[in-house]
Length: 272
Ligand SMILES: Nc1ncnc2c1ncn2[C@@H]1O[C@H](COP(=O)(O)OP(=O)(O)O)[C@@H](O)[C@H]1O
Ligand SMILES: [Mg+2]
Image (cartoon, rainbow, N blue to C red):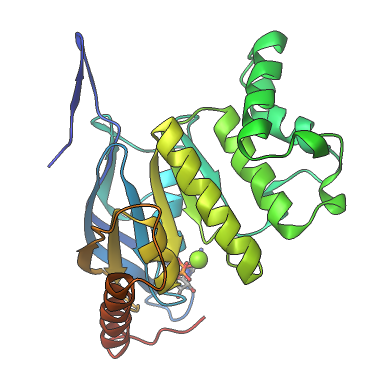
């Protein structure tokens, strides 16, 4: 079903809906090609923090890239505002696992400003948006630095600031903290929850880390291993925020999710 929010005369739907989405890659592994995901149905609600949890290589990035509009489903459809997603758009901001998305020759503020400039946003407005975004992620002091002068956590903050500067309704995040040390990772998780609550964004966050998904999500969609991966089950995380990783119910839910993930593995090759 579609989730609609009534807004005067306009009907604004800010969730994302995947309808029987299949992605087939032609002729890569064998002449027959490779079906990464098959018949995936998923309705991300407006304002929801949705985690997609699955083993490495199951097709999480494939799903996220289709939501971003970088790739098209082979069959099925992905809808936002009742319209099919066919290309990238400023209404969806994407955060990647590492800093490849940053321009190495641009400093922090120019990296954050870049997308606004491309879209022709006026200078005064750009500066305001860049300042606000850098403040939200705590990078005001580092605005003149180049990416190579930043730690891994700071580079991820730049990516998040860049997305926030564009003020998209949906943030699509592909294992954004996968390469970070545990301390930095937990700090960035807290910052993200804070920003998500203050700016009421819809977030789709991909991870293979059970604990991360329980800490962050309103709901966790668990994928099976590929080939032809699908969403096996959806867990509601009804724990109050801020969450405590040592809380009995947190631990219980995490072990239930771990069991669900492992059970899924026997059905596929789960490689790369
Ligand atoms: N462009 C592509 N061409 C061929 N196979 C691909 C392509 N992109 C991804 N795959 C395959 O699809 C499967 C899912 O990949 P991916 O979505 O990156 O998994 P995950 O993000 O869950 O680790 C993998 O087996 C991968 O090799
Ligand atoms: Mg991936």
